[in-house]
Image (cartoon, rainbow, N blue to C red; front, top):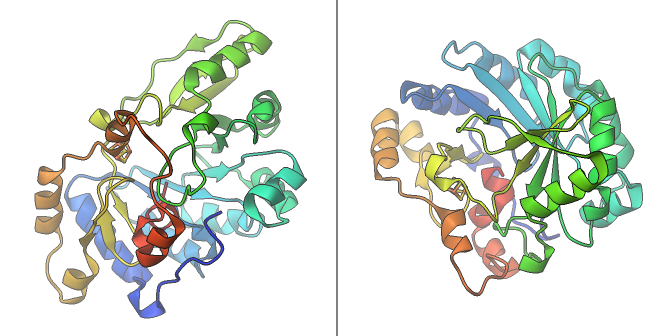
Length: 306
Ligand code: SF4
């Protein structure tokens, strides 16, 4: 969870579904064929399945995904499936209700598990676990076992120092190499699988055939192959999770100006490698303070999608 007192955007600043669809159409015109709805928490947006349906009508979109904290998923899974959502990722950092409460300040653990149980999508379900030393790194094996019972693929994510992670420290990062060592100590020899170079996760197979992923975004960043764009709810376009500034698309959109030239020009200028730059730093602590995040909510990872 972000800090308690974060800044909410006024409603007038939030793009309607039709406006967001127009933004997506412009990106599709530039060649985008994969779209993920994320957050923050996308399921708190009223009538989200209506937006999913709009996007599902776009033939250019080959992959339509959503990332959620799972709290509202049990109620919405069917509607999202019916609307045409291809696949879903649920964040799950712990199987322990008290630990979940400590991490999120919400007593919603049971709802998340209900949501995961209800999540059946054509291209499957993934569970994302941010691994934090001395917080949940004793649950690597139980989480993998649990994912297997749900028919889901688990991905371990190295703890990142993005905006919003105000308590991040290097000592809390459990590197990919250590995750693999701990898992192979328990399960035996782990096989590395060929990965899609556009996907952030490296995939591995356990001796019993189960597959899992690791996103080593902190110790082995993949900026050179990163092709992701992020658009916030108020229509600001970011080309990197770590970017200080984004490009306003809402203004041009509402003035009826074409977005495609802005996007192609912005993308051709792109030279982002935020995680690689952070890795090269000698002294490294949390990226932003709570005060800086309050002054500019766009710096929060939950506004631009992790
Ligand atoms: S840090 Fe930026 S450029 Fe690097 S992988 Fe993440 S979003 Fe892409």
